[in-house]
Length: 168
Image 1 (spheres, rainbow, N blue to C red):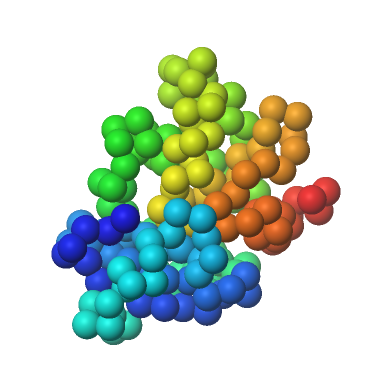
Image 2: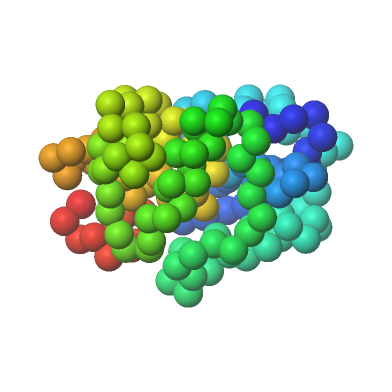
């Protein structure tokens, strides 16, 4: 959850409205309204809304470009500081999975030199505060099945189809 020193804005996407949040260090949140583990609506106080903030505007513009098929990699300063050191390592690992690529929880655990931490990797992925921007939707179960997505499996499926994976 963002700290007390953050601001936010709302944006519409083809998969539903999102709230974006920023701290002094960078973008720290991108949540769908009905996303599991999203901060409660009361956390987004009206006096903290900053739709004209340059970073929040850039994030909205890049999300729009992503959904229009004009952007494959987000280029925004991120603040992953709300996570533990392990969660931050997992979220940084997610950023190495390119547009149109897929990965598995076990493979990510291997790359993090934590081969036995597959469940912990899955848990950290489920806590990703930057939906779409930190691409947790590109991670599948060991059998290639769609598993877990805090924004709903239907969104994960839609994002993967958007990135060219027609089998989902």
